[in-house]
Image 1: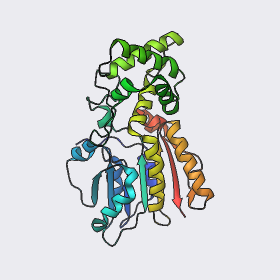
Image 2 (image 1 turned 180 degrees about the horizontal axis):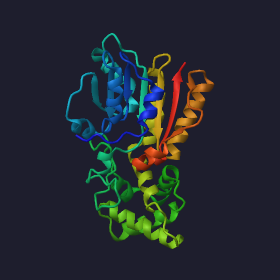
Image 3 (image 1 turned 90 degrees about the horizontal axis):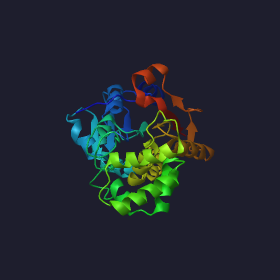
Image 4 (image 1 turned 180 degrees about the vertical axis):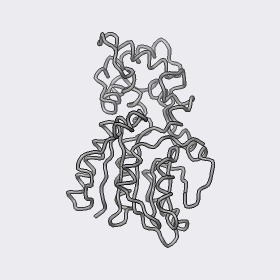
Amino acid sequence: MTIHEPVLLREVLLYLDPRPGQNFIDCTFGGGGHALALLAKVRPGGQVIGIDLDERAIENFGRKAPGLILVNDNYKNIRKIILDKKDELGRNDKISGVLLDLGLSSDQLGSGDRGFSFQAKEFLDLRFSKVSQPVSASDMLRTASEQELVDIFKNYGEERLARPIAKKIIAHRVVDNHAFDSSTLASLVADIYKKFYKRPSKKHPATKVFQALRIAVNDEYGNIRSGLSNSAELLSSGGRLAVISFHSGEDRIVKNFFRDQAKLGRLKIITKKPIAATEEESTKNSRSRSAKLRVAEKV
């Protein structure tokens, strides 16, 4: 079991304000850092439901904690999950808060067999769950048309060189259409960047392409939209929905959802501007540097 360092933990606890006897849902359980911190605040009497699509996250946790209910499922199904767990929640089935941490966990980044890191030669999988998601990133690269690849890189990665990168991938497929690995894709993207940019970037040039493929493979934007809507409906009056995003595409979806729900009188926006990590946390945990927290309350 690995418990990764949870991002913006102090701020999450401040805005969700968990108290004994309340129930919370951590939609992206990961290494369990946020969920265990919430659990410590709601006991005795309260419970935390931890959801994760990655079956390994649930399997690897490796120990039982009183009041912690773990579910291997997609958080977009949150309403069905709570209905199925109604007996375990008992009479106290009100949900006081929901958390979505949209970042990758440390275990996923270091898994070694799914290609999340482009610094190693790994099969380019990028799926959170091999059981429920049949198409890997490698499959997508081998079968998608040039325009489909361009759309993926632009829409999900905001990649400026989407067209030449897509052309490079298609050209590579003509010569070698075997399964893609992470280092091969990273090298193809790096070659394109060298042609267009003389100075190397601080970030690896393949960062946006990997992000875009991961989002496409896992339908992350679709899951976020469904998860936000279903979570908001599930919350009790006065309950809070907290979302941590890590790039502009995710944050835009959250921002627009909160704004639209506020106009309809269903949610009250608590954080007028997204909350960022402190300088101290950013120094200790590099993953927190791009994190943004938005919170809204059920009216």
